[in-house]
Image 1 (cartoon, helix red, strand yellow):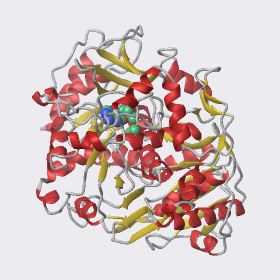
Image 2: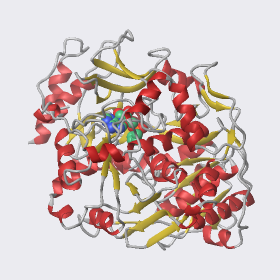
Image 3: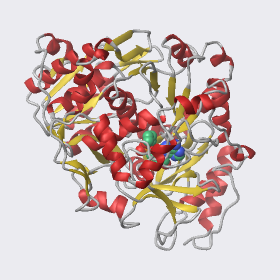
Amino acid sequence: MEKTALEDRVFYPSEEVVKNANITQEIYEEAKKDRLGFWKRMADELVTFFKPYEKVLDDSNPPFFRWFTGGTTNVSYNCVDRHYNSPKRNKAALCYESEIGRKVILTYRELYVEVNKFANVLKGLGVKKGDRVCLYMPMIPECAIAMLACTRIGAIHSIVFGGFSSESLADRINDATAKILITADGNFRRGTPFPLKNNADVALQSTPSIEKVVVVKNAGNEINMVEGRDLWYHDLMATADKYCPPEEMEADAPLFILYTSGSTGKPKGVQHTTAGYLTQVQATLKYVFDLKETDTFWCTADIGWITGHSYVVYGPLALGMTSFMYDGTIDYPDKDRMWDMAERWGVTVFYTAPTAIRTFMKWGTEYPKKHDLSQLRLLGTVGEPINPEAWMWYYENIGGGRCPIMDTWWQTETGGFMITPTPIIPLKPGTATIPFPGIEVDVVDENKQPTDRGYLVVKSPWPSMLMTIWGDDNRYIDQYWKRFGDMYFAGDGAKRDEMGYIWVTGRVDDVLNVSGHRLGTAEIESALVECEEVAEAAVIGKKHDVKGEAPCAFVILKDGFTGSPELVDKLKKHVGVKIGPIARPDDIIFTASLPKTRSGKIMRRLLRDIAEGRALGDVTTLADPGAMQEIAAQYAGKED
Ligand code: WT7
């Protein structure tokens, strides 16, 4: 993180904001005195249980913590039925706009009907409690409907981001042995349909567990429907019954699986649970984004990521709020698209990622200036540390200097916000500030001792924590609980300042953060070594103005092959096809050797130094010191 003078600037909340905020100082104090009591109160206020729980937290079998055990509930019941049965019945639940300007508003009543019908469709296709349903969909209302329909019948959804490749999709379907795939013909990207179903078709050649494919007609692009396997969503919905009783689910039943990258080549199926998740996503949204009945909340994340799960769908709907979703590129037809929509839909709370903010910043203030953004009252960011310069730009040009910015630190694994300001907390550009009430984190050294610069850990279980890694309890333990024993290790480094604020400095494991998306270096490396020309590859994250980090690959070719611009293109393309476009390396550097420690570990820090053009660090631990000079020379040559 660059040290700037701004780091010392503190923005105090206005009296007005403090007076109207859902959160109070007393709530922080309450949670500090009695953490479990606070979470109990949250669950009692925010979740409708069918059968009351017996225990707030069952910690008898760590690290397999269970929340609200003994209770039963249903997530779709909490997200739609209880609003359908209230004066919110005709309130907008989901507002949607497509890239080509198609608009849909679903009220809670309408959403209720659609969810019930689609739950019956899934039942009709043989989906039962505990079965896995894979979603490979655009950001369309049907995606939220399908999620809620799964939860209604107790099926576990696994959403695969639409930007992932066929192979990534197939891997995820097979790991979860999903029975049904729900997808769409395509969706618009810069005015042309992106062929989602065609991609799915390639995956479906190697996914024996899939019995049926449900296809939403969205972009109208030509697709192939396989007789007996592929079914149109609208055909199935046309004859579906209007009511499906919600399945009574155990509080700790699995709710969904979401794959994320780790430090090995194989993505992890992060498994989330029911009542604890529902408690924390609502509590955090209510107190951090301070949602009120009159708000229109726009979280720009794709539903394919955890942010979309928790804060486009489950959090806002469970709270009975209005959630806006947009499916399209941010600069189509022009660079003011986001602000145009924010104005037209009357967005009051806006939540996006630093990479997007840096892009807006690059485009200039003329675009937000074209629109009246005076309805905005609160802003947020997530995904990576935000550089103070981007924070200031966001604060001044989007928030008009009046909207507090909630910099929320959390992860796919945490399910909901963990370290975050609330509107009553003084802000500093670049820090996620302090833990949310009821959350206990620390910065520790190798020996678990508190320090001002070290590893970020969570010291006690929290309601929306992952249950395990799908099908791999050992990996769950190894990954998160081995290093610091009874503390959850997040994989991030952090420092603590004199105000006690936590500054997350980024991953300390072999995980890249490209535009707020996690990619394992091992995943990209294994894609590269699949190519017949490649003997060995090392991938590192290179600092990038917009993306935060960009993948950069050092490649050793097999004998008989030589590097060429064509080969660079081929390798980049292969990674794009294998994993998805976000994983495509920006640079590929051919080299004869890689710097390794004596134990054979690639010295990524040194590769990063070279890629970013810094002076070479200490190379005395290198097995072959000459390697470094050679790589440096190659890289310098490339930039000429
Ligand atoms: C990793 C989690 C949580 C949804 C988006 C990404 C980084 C996330 C922040 C923040 C600094 C952040 C961390 C974390 N990260 N938010 N506000 N400040 N870093 O979810 O893909 O699970 O990635 O993103 O490195 O570990 P994810």
